[in-house]
Image 1 (tube, rainbow, N blue to C red):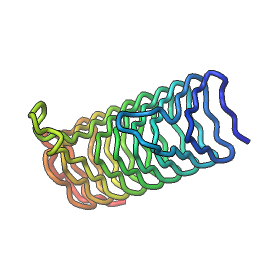
Image 2 (image 1 turned 120 degrees about the horizontal axis):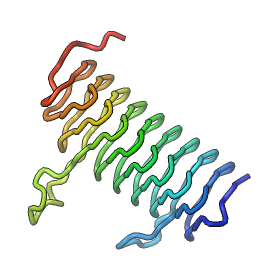
Image 3 (image 1 turned 90 degrees about the vertical axis):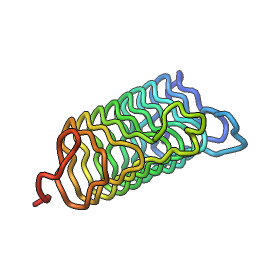
Image 4 (image 1 turned 135 degrees about the vertical axis):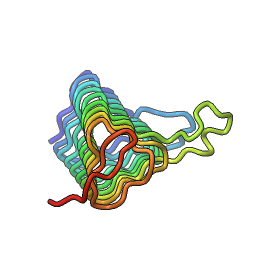
Length: 199
């Protein structure tokens, strides 16, 4: 049985699975510029907490949850058992695989790919603009690829188009300026390898 707060706004074209909870002042299926007739799907047993905006065209799996005031832009693909924390922003055309955890106040830009089971700590900033304010900036956008099981600590910044290797760990406060190999621990500004992951 669905539970939708009376203050929530649900636009046409939204498909909600069984057991979905939508709390106060959420907006689901919010139209965007250039929208034609995109459906918005949220899988069963999901919890959308107060103040969250989810734009049209998102395809979201089951057991999804947000913190308060998450902002999820249009046309993303989000798997099962994903959580997106309070005040985090997920821009458009992002792919989030099963079991990903995105903590509070994280910024995930367009064309980012988060593979299965990766963990993104609070206040992490992923970037995609190689040439900010350039007239052709949008032609050169390239999101970050975070491979399966990687963990990114709090307050990390990752530069555009980089790859964080499978199972790697990025220490808190690091600035990642180059690709990170699989299975290593890195930290610092710029982030450098400390050792291999041993767990």
